[in-house]
Amino acid sequence: MSSTIRSLEDAADHIIDTLKHFLQVDTLLIATIDHNGSRIIRALNRHENEGTNSLPLHLLQSCCNLVLEQDCSILNITNTLDDPRTASLPITQQLGTQALVGIAVRTADQTAVGTLCAINKEPIHLDERQLGFLHSMAAFFGYILDLENASVTDSLTGLYNRRYLSHLDHAGSDKQFSVMFIDIDDFKEVNDSFGHDFGDLLLLQISKRLKQDVRKTDILVRYGGDEFVICFQHLVDNQDIDFVASKIKKSIDEPFTINGHIIHISASIGISSTHGTASSLKELISNADLAMYDNKQNEKKL
Image (cartoon, rainbow, N blue to C red; front, side, top):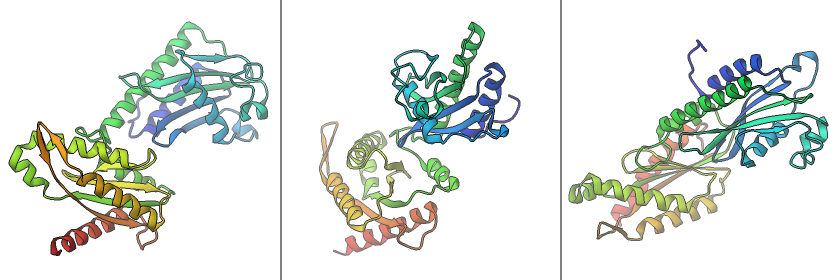
């Protein structure tokens, strides 16, 4: 692996390129898990250049999901048509008898974050060297995912950070987003009165409440010191967005208890969606930031 690894996709390319020499199988898959569930980021079909149509990813993904459901170090099914775990899967119905080998990719805390899978027409027999190498590749990819998660996660709150937003923007996601920009009012006064450690505890409690107020598929980001951004996928109805904004404001208005102190704070919120003129996630965030600032100024006048 002499080339520089710049992304998860690069790492997956290296792993598949290496595995194909150790495992003589028809298909190799690498999938990751995020807030939307599992997704295949790289797949190799040895027969694709021989006129064989490549399988739809959603069919292949069912194999990856099955690996995640199993409580074993490695899944090895010699006949998918005869095994009750795979017999009814759409991919089995389409391909008929296949062999499947899969291993979960885990991070340092043993959280499942992905899978490596191999599919072959004939049974897959792994010797000790191949089995050990498969485990090593899974451990290596888990290490890469640990590093990637650390780079896009805020160290205090565990929420996504601005780097993750840049990743989404550069990826050119085809999802429709509505963006909410949240600024905690007078947070500096809390830090000045009680200290930064106290302020960090308050941010943790704010983050916890925000998590409770949004869906698992929504992307919650600590944008700056006391600023948060929420990206709502496919939530572009103004009434729905206004309802969530009202819910969040009420949640933040509820008193916080920290080290015996009762703290009252409020939040200013701005919203932008794809109904407007913004054509990128970056522009949506900028527009929501401007809307938040206008709302903050208007509230001060009241």
